Image 1 (cartoon, rainbow, N blue to C red):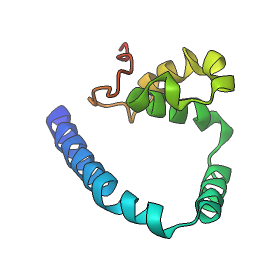
Image 2: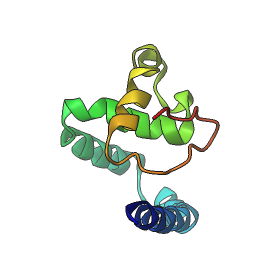
Image 3: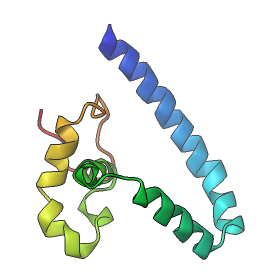
Image 4: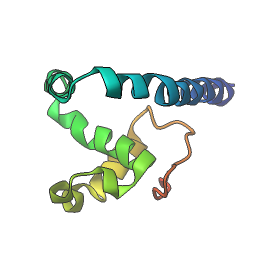
Length: 105
């Protein structure tokens, strides 16, 4: 029963993200300056605890593969980040996209 509920939440989230990518991000690209965007990234990333880094990198790699990680971080995160994400409670039933390697349970 929980898996069914999580699948429904995941489907709604993916639909929401698709709409956001198609409609909101193009507007943001036209109306938010790079310096404003960088400030948002800086403020947001300052609030992330260091121990969450591998999980966040694993989420990004789950969606976009190793190419989403800066080159200087690829070697240390290539194995650690996917394992950290797979072990995290947020790693429900989502399937990898963009050629990312599947997680092992």
